[in-house]
Length: 483
Image (tube, rainbow, N blue to C red; front, side):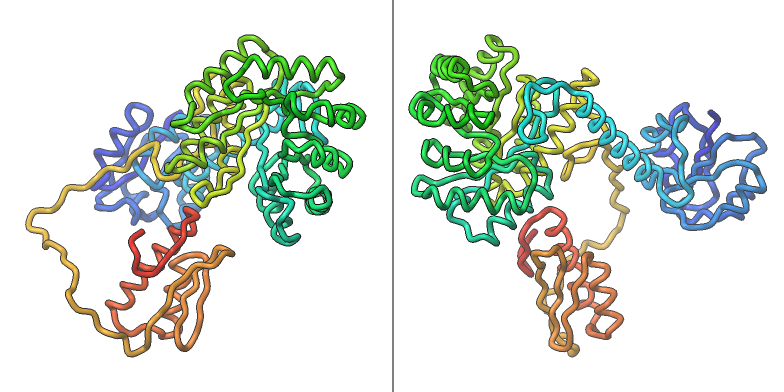
């Protein structure tokens, strides 16, 4: 396929390096290629016939007439020159757009294709059993179980909202965590509320046999957790209702008791079992617990595994997104069936979404027998796959410094906050303005004449952008604080 890439003088070297021998490069007599127009391009076009012409992804001119005249598709390439090599790899099989930059189009197409592929793989997969309508074990996707901590004591609206939040973020199973002082009446109430809010499978997390039996009668699908101390009192109910049960060791470090408890459960007639060798936090036996998972899978190739990712994520001061990604990769290698998280602490916020994305990535990676990269899905938030080039500081440039004084704007001040609903709020004595982006809010402020000083407008731009980033990264925001 013969491709011509259009650029300007400033990006010439970057474009040529990125394109390599995969395309020709035409350098127009302008500094910045974003200002390319149909007339300018027509003036410089070579006589050679091309199958495709790629212009910079941020060009806004209409090239339809020129396309017809030269009988060659003119499409938007990537927004950044460094991405040219990436998009050229897919040029043969991709219909690029005249309106959407190639980098965005390709990433969205690959994301949609990845999700479709995952859906097809899950549809074809063979499970060991079902919890409700959800496949567990076999070669089905690892499922994400989200725990509502102390569900028995939560007010109805708080419990409902928590369950809805987890489901919206991709939870496959909702777990109702019960504290030690929860009554059977409270446990039954929690199950009732959960079933009214959601139709996905429910589990109950407690060692109390009375609460387990109450949960089974109320309609839970999975019991967390059984060991030698409570099994006798609940197994008949589990067998009668054909429910699944997570089996734990009597002591976290004792893998032999896990095998013993599994054998006892099977021999008693409980068929749908999930084994939990217990994942420990870093500093409290993480390496040893991973070794137990490895040992378990060597000795038992088929029993579904429960992987308590939240035990690690909640107890480390590190961004959960990377921790959850690597834990999901480890779980995939052990053929785990369930990834568990309570998403309890503020720093673990978003763990359900992260684990769901990671579980999909691992399913694709396993299918392709590859590392979990270049799949169409990723968990890259702060890191880049391809870095943009840095510029050189011009000689003789003025050294910037902040002004020592500030002046009150006669039009008044603003109080900037963010709402739980995901909006930026700018409060002024004459109006309150809300919007999803800094640009929306600052443009509206200017339109209504609520700012008169350039330094105040610049300040608002800085603060509103910080607020937008806080929303994007699900962080809190406080005006004038560092972000």
